[in-house]
Length: 202
Image (cartoon, rainbow, N blue to C red; front, side):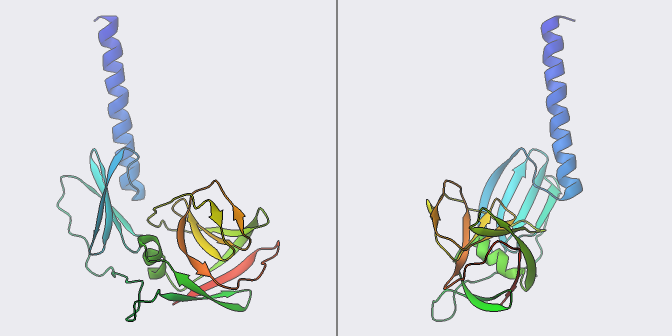
């Protein structure tokens, strides 16, 4: 066997191994495969489908996911709600927020991230301090994202960093980071340097 053929076979073996390993982790942990193409669906309760080589991961509007083999016919559940972020008058939906026993109103954005976040409520979190301008917590679930660099963060902005880090900003400043906006809390107080307890309710 020639050296060139051995190298080619070794490369193919490694590639197949990576594909199988990626498929295994996706099924085992109900994750999207690392190697995938995303089809934005935005129909019914399906937000998007991450299509791998051997598996597809359905991402629903409430943040839940289901990974199935591509050759298996899958019928998405019909009990996952479709959330409308506007009331009958067309105004943005509001969420009650209690921070260290102080009550606020979160005006929710009209996007899929906010819709999915709302389906998880009520929730209570302990949020840690970072950089003297924000409180954050890593959620135990993922949310759909459409992150952009807003250039400027405003005091009271509630953002998602990545797909599972919830952030409340209590200072206004310029930024180079990208976020998906969930909403805004008006008249938010300076939250200080300590961790805070935050409760979100519909």
